Length: 163
Image 1 (cartoon, helix red, strand yellow):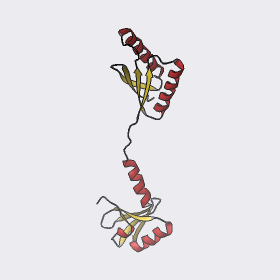
Image 2 (cartoon, one colour; image 1 turned 180 degrees about the horizontal axis):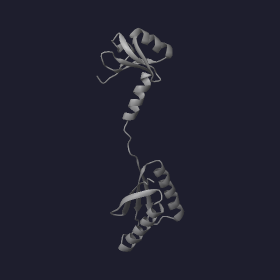
Image 3 (cartoon, one colour; image 1 turned 180 degrees about the vertical axis):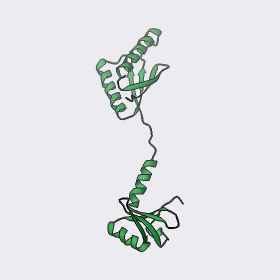
Image 4 (cartoon, one colour; image 1 turned 45 degrees about the vertical axis):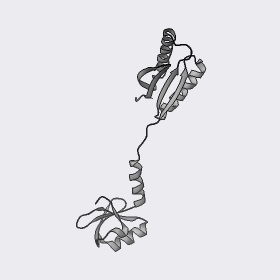
């Protein structure tokens, strides 16, 4: 059996009782255990299914809550920050502050530079150099995997630097 029996679900007349603080009380009848649990404001939870079942006094609702809390999956959140290749220095510093804030909250950041204007080798090279400079400014808080070039965009995925 995987589900713990609680209070009236327990069928054995004699049980081994463990108190809420973990000390072993000993063998008692189920009716005595119910009286003790009621006086202390706890439930009787069967934790072992031996010949003489082992039961513990505790808050069953709290145990169920904690077990469900650990089962929840934690989704990874990705935030996206876009800049242009001709962004002003002040605007860039604000975007970097946002990136630092997102990384401090353990979010992944997709950092995108949109290249505006005619794409020629000179503009692409300048944009690439500027993006690498921007990434190096964030190197104290972030690491990056790889720089991707797509049409008129330069994409970088940033994650929090673990120290």
